[in-house]
Length: 330
Image 1 (cartoon, helix red, strand yellow):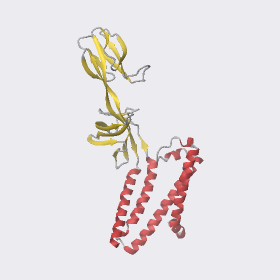
Image 2: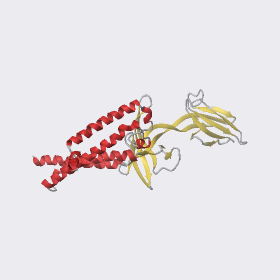
Image 3: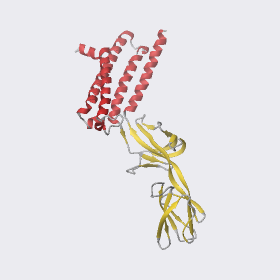
Image 4: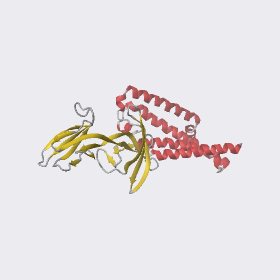
């Protein structure tokens, strides 16, 4: 038994595990290329896919789990053996334990990947604007509310966003903070285990500038605009962008004209098409389309992130001790 434990903690066994892991990763890549239909639904590091969609085609992954498990065992036994030797020879002299801390950090990093694969999950995406957060699909109140306060963005010549840094007001449990959200710059909570990632960004139509009987006003979809001095009420039913209606090449408002008798007449009011007089005593035009910043944000939970951060801190501490040991010897 002692010989088996000694072999499992040996350098030779660690090298064998390393080669096995490399070979199985190559086999997995080739298998995915040969049978892509078997991996539909696999996302990121979510390994629950392999548990709920078990099959022989995933042979490489199950063997990979065994290989990684043996590799972690090898690291643990190797670290334990080295720790015992140093303890007997140097006692509790801190500067000799740098490599031990680094080994423990590597083990924690591998464990964090396992925890991530088992716990990672994503919430429903939500749109945030300059007014408030809106949760898509269910319209349920989000755990935290976000509102865009300020935007620093730049665009390519084709109109696609090149850079977007949003100053976001975050309300959580009655407390309001201001944080920055951008591509590859998420808002994090709980030591990184919860992230709010910006998936898309753009400026979306928010309101239209209309002139009604010489008076300018900003109206949004669904607004009702009474016309002073007349019996008319203008209802802005919808906003169409180019291509959303047959032959439409510019933005247009679908408006209804309601008189005192409740008679409704509808029509498209195109941007910049000039003044339209749908009835005596009423003139109107659609002069400008206002756009507001809007971002699509997805909530992501990953319980392995705090463990990974801890392993990084531990590894840096170990490397710092190793460097200190080198200077101590010099």
